[in-house]
Image (cartoon, rainbow, N blue to C red):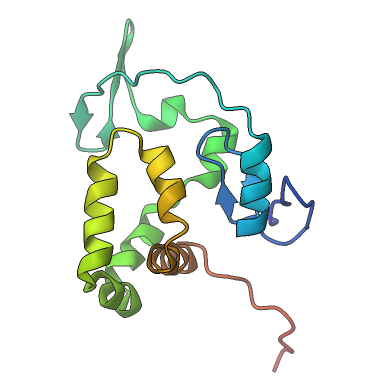
Length: 153
């Protein structure tokens, strides 16, 4: 298991579970997110190029042949990638299923999925307690917190 990354805002050694959608800086909490948001200098916005799909994931065409997602990930990206077996746990979670029964949450997710500017809409939704509960539930499933202060039996 990898060591938790420190918060880029307050410097806390604890797990910085969240990343800025504009610059990918790590932070640990909503207050640190707000502080970072005031200082964040976003990268210039680039229009994404459409990527052809294949069974193993997106493929990017290049002169020497197609690329897979693994070819274009950097070391920093790779460490944040969630393994497929953990993503499958999302489908098995009763807590997540119960949250998804809420029509308001489903509408938020559908609107986010269809939005052009997902980053700013995500920031807005992270102020909604129901959406934060959903995000925390997902994070708790794919990256469960380490047990602290537990004595071995």
